[in-house]
Length: 566
Image 1 (cartoon, one colour):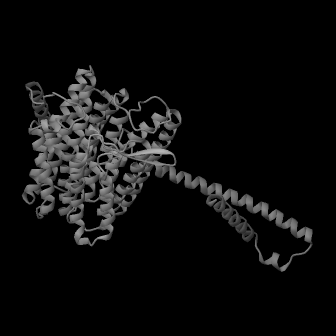
Image 2 (cartoon, rainbow, N blue to C red; image 1 turned 180 degrees about the vertical axis):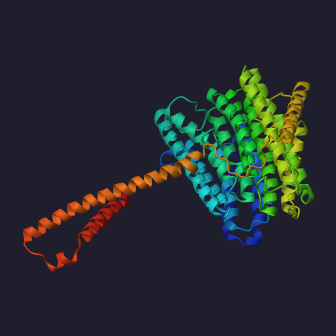
Image 3 (cartoon, rainbow, N blue to C red; image 1 turned 90 degrees about the horizontal axis):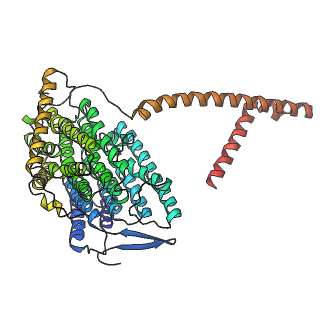
């Protein structure tokens, strides 16, 4: 062991345990102090060659192995944990606060580990700890969404474990380095990463869970799971061409669902998939500029998406409503929240001088440099689309649009502080991107603020704004559909219900027929016994055939349970 003695995840796990033991009055302070302490250890104690290894059943596990790639994610995860802790200052639920610390610690463990088995352990710890943030929503829908979320996340972990086992049998190594898409083992790992990254058709856990979590829980959910998956793809599958086209699809298809969506947190969930698409596309391109762009955009997305989630969380906290059809006019009573939300909207829309501009342009330039003209056009379309549904729709329908008549207090001071810090970071990074570029995996001389980039982006944003105004004035834009829109969720919201009913009916018929056959068989045996004995004893008279069948079935059930337990 060299360098650092305490990995960041250990600090967070200790904090998660303390959160369950401390008095409620200390919870909020603990949730801010823990990430600050861990960040200090990371910044001031990490040596370039620091690592922590251990050996279990003959396998060498690397618990901590920092480098330029994972340090970018480590820094922003600490920022997210601090902002989330400040935003959740009023939350006094030990389970919720312990889950946030365990979740952040698991995410840090996943990005800093150096082998696939340790990655699997933190992968599953992330799943279990984050599920509590959905369940803490406290409604029937949140319980169901949390259960679906956990199921999908555990499946991702099992695929990762299976892929790691096959990879070890093929190569004799568990080192988490570049894997590449070349066989069954790598394919399983690729799909495992894809689930957490919200690949198309594997994405519904994100739109499902983020809308049912607590206001503070959603801030954490938006920061960690998908970004850990982005990091994992960058580590294991950089340069995989399939990712270029997967990312391109991810940037485009959420736009259509977000535009017609009523729940504003669900709109932000779709926009998260859109933004992750840019990162995935950059990882697929695989050049130094593209990987830098993916890492920088992940860094910025954690902050500006967190700001947007916090602004909507503040609205939900004060009004109890999240549908665009129920909101509007809140700028009159929540002007500070409205202003901070607009900063987040400008950042995600990649306005010049805001953070999204200085990272998204890196991926788009990398696509052009590598000759992916069609991909570049798709990314251009996606950039205009995100301005529609996240840059305009979120602040417009929450704070402006029609006046809903709702009059509430401004967001609590703790929430405003967290949002203000995030807003300052968005503006600071957008205005002085060189400080972010210094953290990136590769040295770069990329300049975001040249005339071509700035003018092209301003023209794109103006065109998108004019399109929104025209659609709104013409009555074509669908802002207030009082409905729940589903995409691939049909498989379990509708399809599984239909399948479940059919299966239940089929099983009921099968059981009835089996029971009837068993009943007839036992009855025949029963009659034969009576004929052989030549008499009907009192016991035979009192015991019905149904009783005999019940005993047979019960003994069989006990036998099955015994086999399973054994």
